[in-house]
Image 1 (spheres, rainbow, N blue to C red):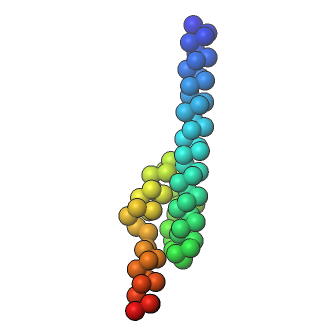
Image 2: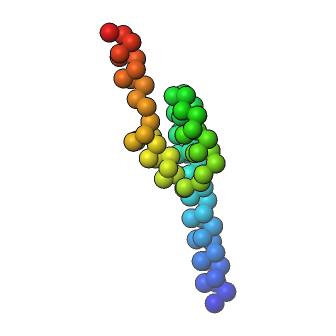
Image 3: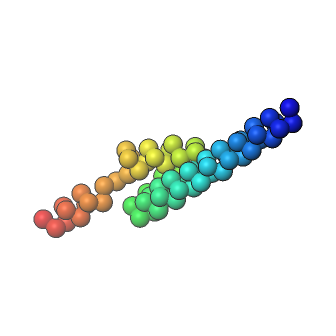
Length: 76
């Protein structure tokens, strides 16, 4: 019984740390991109709200301004 509780606790701790690392990686990428794109509102929301990477992934793939479109318009 005690060994089973220890295994559950150990697995829980491992999953917890994997989620923390997952969230930090996505949050770092999204915050960096929001800062580079001068999107202050997105930067603040992602800094305060913790969604285990879901909001950050949505920002990166859906809501992020495309910097390539801006630079290609300026070159023309």
